[in-house]
Amino acid sequence: MPYQLTIQSVIRHASRLFSDTEIVSVTADHPQHRYTLGDALERAAQLANAFKSIGLKSGDRVATIAWNDFRHFELYFGISGYGAVTHTINPRLHPEQLIFIMNDASDKVLFIDSMFVPLIDAIRPQLKTVEHIIVMTSDAAAVGEYLMYEDFIAAQPNTYPWPEDTDENQAAALCYTSGTTGNPKGVLYSHRTMLLHAMSLSQPDALGMGRNSVILPVVPMFHINAWSIPFVCAMVGTKIVFPGPKVMDFEALTDMLIAEKVTLTAGVPTVWAGMAQYLQKSGKQLPHLERMVFGGTACPPYLLDYYTKEHNINVIHAWGMTETSPLGTCNTVLPMAATSWSAEAQRAQRLKQGYPVFGVELKIVDDAGAELPWDGKTQGYLYIRGLWVCDGYFNQPDSRGNDWFNTGDIAVIDQYGCMRIMDRAKDLVKSGGEWISSSDIENIVQGHPDILQAAVIATAHPKWDERPLLIVVPKEGVQVKGEELLKYLEGKVATWWIPDDVLFAESLPINATGKVQKNDLRDIYKDYRHADFG
Image 1 (cartoon, rainbow, N blue to C red):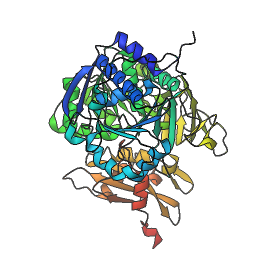
Image 2: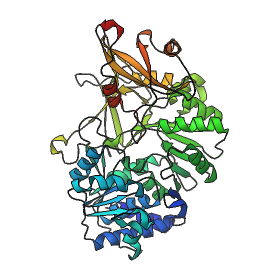
Image 3: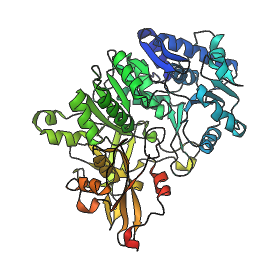
Image 4: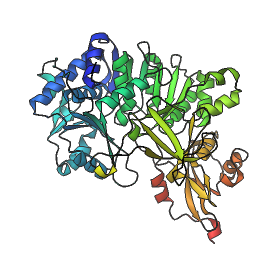
């Protein structure tokens, strides 16, 4: 049957089957808010009616600058279900980038959390197309001159005739890349690609979600549609726990994981490193948590060891990017590995980024574009194509029509199809014509008991062209010498990989998704010179 894969079909399915599924969240005006998926979808219907009342058209972009909570969840369904495009925006981008993004997208309506009112006040005159600004709160004192969310939907009916004839190839969501070089680039997702992606994500060898699961997504809802987790929860009836602005409050996160009996959580290694420190200090356990997904950057080996050994949690490595919706690979243990491989071999395999899920294909190529073998050793540029991989960027017609997408990563793929990211191409250190993986060095150093964070960047060298510079943040109250860290690397990496110097910092520049901003570090240390310069 010519059944359309649309957000509206998810709404109809969830309303009939999973209306009692619980949604728990933290917001500025609700320390603990509880209601059901049925309640959420009724309020999404109120949103759709409110959009109709202000004359919003199908295809118009509706922006959000908000944390993970029940109102943001309602927007995911109310906007796309209405036929508009949900445009989620990273609140920690530079104001100039926020202005560019909203003007480039021609956003008509903007929803913001109350804490972002001052941010929008400062840039409001430069937003060329925004006609309505709505603050996501019930606190009238927090909205300033803007409209309050609860007032916006209050008078509207809680039913809406969700259209059944929406073309599945119609745009449903829009996300922009982080813009580490130049302006951010927009990636437009259709109803079809988002639903195919969500269905793939729910599979047993991906996140394996179902009615008996409870998920707490730390991955932000402003980042690549929260990896499609809200849509998966509505498809399969998974209880969802939203941490709101508490994403870096590890005591609050731990208490939510325990109290709500969360079985699955997903986020970036920066969060899980902070959580590990808190758990070690507090002595708390996570008795219900079964699986923890690492994405965004590589999982440091010490964190894999800590969560698997100390908490008996299955650590799942996943990889993707804005341009891939984001899921590209997911790492689950091979049956043969579980039964016949040594513990050391299993650990090494689990630290890789994983196997391509059905719907995407991978290849690695050399400088000339020739495909390279899957032998686990040969490094090449990683390319991807698939059902939910973009073929170009929004408002950039010259970028479209690609058969394969160049990820910008250097990778290897083993004989089993398991992919390992060696580094971002731009973050590799090319010393004497040979590549050095900055991420490998960082992951090892972060396993040192006295180190909180580590980053490696390339610096100019008169003989070798580039050499790695190690920048570290020690744990609070700890003193450690650079020589000790270089000694710590001996035997763990090739001798010529070991950095020539170590610098200490109070903190590293981190973006809102938990990634170290290497471009910022390169700017900060652009004047660094090795002793060999004389």
